[in-house]
Length: 143
Image (cartoon, rainbow, N blue to C red):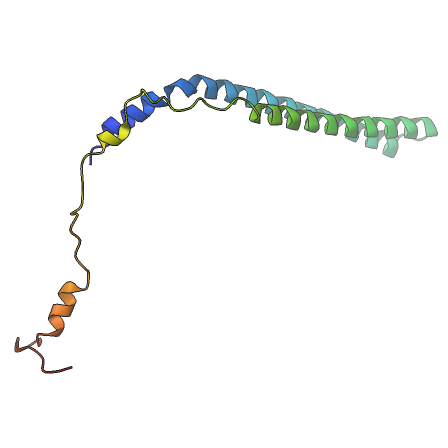
């Protein structure tokens, strides 16, 4: 079965969405890059605050470390929620246009048949063999 004309017609039909798909992929990459940058920055600020609390003596450094850790946590959460919101906005974008009814119909390209329309039972040949003995070729008597 030759599917080349069908694949050409299908590619021509979906060609309009290629530019939009590329723009969507680029937007997703930007969102993921911002998310990764925000997460790494937040984790480094949290680590800075924890190290400040752990290794420097005094109440001032303890407080400063706690504030840094809390700010890092808030920054991390803000970057995640911002990325999720942007992904949700992108997902709720416009729907693809309806199919063009003036476009050529691909069903007419599938005119070849690869099977017989008159099907036979798989068991037809084996049930005929039940009536013939294997050695003598004589029909069996009453079963």
